[in-house]
Length: 201
Length: 199
Image (cartoon, rainbow over all chains, first blue to last red; front, side):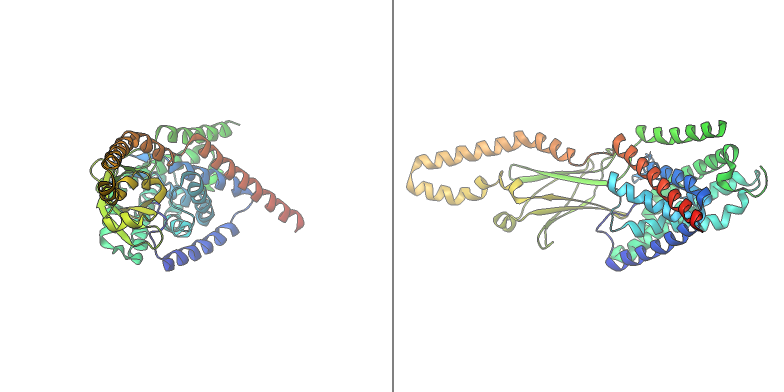
């Protein structure tokens, strides 16, 4: 999911950074005293999730957890993912510093969309697992599409990379779906304040 | 209290997962062996990359000097074209794994030239030596053979040295990152509490 340094053209890098900055400002505005610690906790989860390697499929893929961050944090997943990616770039040499903006957008934008689409279904215990699974699945699918789009704007064409990126990430989509459903269920049980559920569960 | 314990368990599980598992990043490294340059491409975590395109560039102007691809085991080898052997530029070896995966390795001229001077200098030197004295020719040949053998013998050592320049994320890296996140959260909380106090 992380695009490496030196692959994308300058216009893509600049517009990615601009979009990431806008999303981060929006996200930081919504951070209040209550949500700072959950945000840092989920950012930590995102930071280490990239080390969990999924040994299936043709490529080399790992967990992302962006769907989980989107569902629990909403717009605040932008700063959470940005910081997580920054630390991954510095400590693990994943991605890179110049490409931070593009990678942030490809992972955080689908997460925010999933928050708008599925957040409301988390309130009822009946629809919760399904909604969380779909959010986890869809966020990776959309991230793959955005990654392919970013590559397309820098000359690799769109269809071929889109196919390979999506094919490589199909196992991740399914696994992310299950993990998101499991963690959301777990948080709802032990720490429902993080999810800010509207009705008592 | 019980809730806190649950959260701690969740965090601990998340922390322990990566110890058993691995991650991805396309890493490439190369070293000279005799007159050739050998290399390996792999995803971090040890998974070998297959059939990845390798481009050898002049590090100064990014002109492509040679192109090759790695085999099923992620290994590749190539010989520099004659022109490049004369000029001996620093080499930037770039692996393009597609899907936005890219790795590069800088092989400086001083690193691979050591294995080479006998090679490139040999024809001229032996011609000179041949006209001057017979003993010089033998010495040149011996030097060349020794240099080649040394280079072959040193190859595994060079390989493991190069491998160590691409370290895997360690527990120290992970804990360092988590420490940063907790620190940032503390910073944000402090800023927030100041703001609420002032207003």
